[in-house]
Image (cartoon, rainbow, N blue to C red; front, side, top):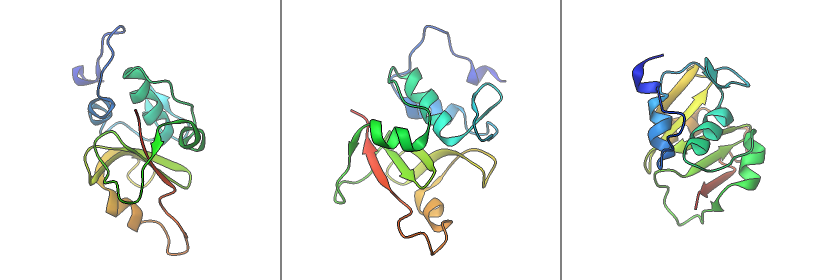
Length: 134
């Protein structure tokens, strides 16, 4: 662990994306919620908690419980959540997703378009929901 990952126990971050970006490079582990490794929903749960927002554990539960669904005409912005089949990430800006994933085996920031492109053509709808935390 480096100093950039340290946070006072009583400190809340108003920006969950800032906390997610501090975790870039942290190892991926299915079921991981911090400490040594994270999975996608563990990352989202952790950074939202550090910003003072309660979040369920799993991505399907997070999709059902968190935020307001965005209309197709609403552009993504920093802090929006994007849900896929069995996966979730948080937007750093309108184009870049921060997520813990098994493709890179770590937390990364990468273009959302690249994440979507990795889904097989047989996936009828790679993006299940786009949500904004109030």
